Length: 243
Image 1 (tube, rainbow, N blue to C red):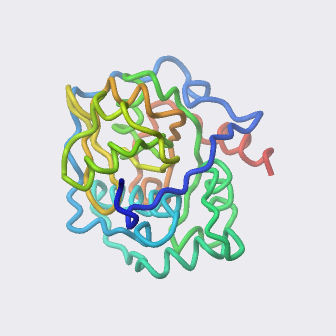
Image 2: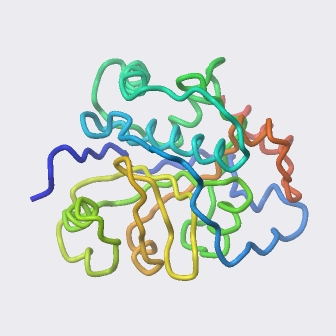
């Protein structure tokens, strides 16, 4: 059995009506991404409470912001594990109930101070099975915010520092998990989970992932990133209509 100190907490995906995939907001085709993106230079990702609570959604958001800041060379103050836990429990009204990723992103966007002082400007779903789209989104916005199913074998492999491959499917699914994907190469996607970098093969990814989101953070906006034809105005207008 898996180590109980590795917690899950991602609830089933929900895709709000009236919010379209990222490609809808682009005039013309998205650019072709490079063949690989290196890992962000983050010294210590940290568990951020995900060894005590099912706060992988909030932890994944902060890890994504950390990747963004490292790539754009911005120095920021990062929350402690307890601060992330407190923010999570404030969102869930004190219950360790997990989060729906799209609901949590909406909540963070609407808060004047974001989550633990880190804000997001916009977000949109992408096709989680389109490898080129995944790579393009990571290249453009420094990470993607995703939801996956986790098997018992995957948890054991993570504890042993082993990559996730199709061999890890042959065990029971133990729950849903939120992971930001921060890098890729020809053979692997690289994601942050339980305080470490985890490799996952593309065939495995197609079996375990069921949602992926572009998250445009305050770090990205402050850095003056290239929008590559994406209409932020149109995307924000659709998000505003969601309430």
